[in-house]
Each structure stands twice: as C-alpha cells, then as structure tokens.
Length: 137
Ligand code: GDP
Image (cartoon, rainbow, N blue to C red; front, side, top):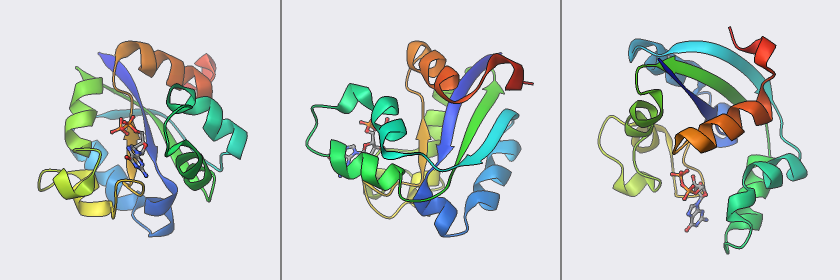
C-alpha cells in the first residue's frame, strides 16, 4: 500500500463537486485515511507550493488556493500516487482525458479542481504539511 496527498481545490468545493469527487475516489478503490475541510491562508499556500516560487503563475496560484475552503485528503491504495495522478488527468483540463477529474470538474489550467502529489518525496512532504501522524487512520 502507498499513500498520496490530494486536494479538492476551492473551485470544485465552491461548485458543489466535493461529494461527486469523493464518490469517484472511493469507487476507484482508494481508502480515505484522513480528510479535512480547511481554508489555506496565503502563506499556507505559498509554503505548500514553495517549489513553484519562481514561476510566473505563483501569485495567482496561491491567491486562488487561499480563496475559499478546500478539502485536503490522505489516500491509500496500491501505487496510490500514480493511480491518483491518472484519475485526475492532465494539469490543463483542455488536455485531460475523458472521465478524469480535471476534464469533468476543472474549467481552466488555474482552476483545475484537484491536486495530487507527483512523487514519493512530495507525497511525504505534502502529507506531513497537512496531517499529524495520529490523524492518519
Ligand atoms: P500539477 O502537478 O498537475 O498540479 O501541476 P504543477 O505542479 O505543474 O502546477 C501546480 C498548479 O499550478 C497546477 O495544478 C495549476 O493549477 C497551476 N499551473 C500550472 N501551470 C500553470 C500555468 O501555466 N498557468 C497558470 N495560471 N497556472 C498553472
């Protein structure tokens, strides 16, 4: 079993898609091992996306991620990291395969509905950024 970190981003929560996305997560065979509705501060978002600090979209990204409530999740499954990336689809919803989260619930590259860790090291960092060990059931 592997764990990954996921976010239902503020655009998807505001649009009322949290339930549909959670249902797809469970249907796909992930176990939800932690979950919380939270609103990131601007500095929370800047710390989370620190790797993107030099990118031109950093300010827009962190402003958007702190613009409203989001659902943060720890998911468990065999090969959870790649499995969740596949289910999410490409970063830009316009390029995402049919049936993926971003295709179905995202509206643009900066409002793309979901986040998922891209490697074991980032999953470890991101899980610990949001959850204490005791919260992971
Ligand atoms: P991800 O791993 O698929 O989420 O993509 P990245 O780690 O490359 O980028 C993080 C997030 O920044 C993405 O999910 C997008 O919401 C946003 N992003 C990435 N590239 C761009 C871009 O070129 N323009 C804008 N506005 N946002 C972007």
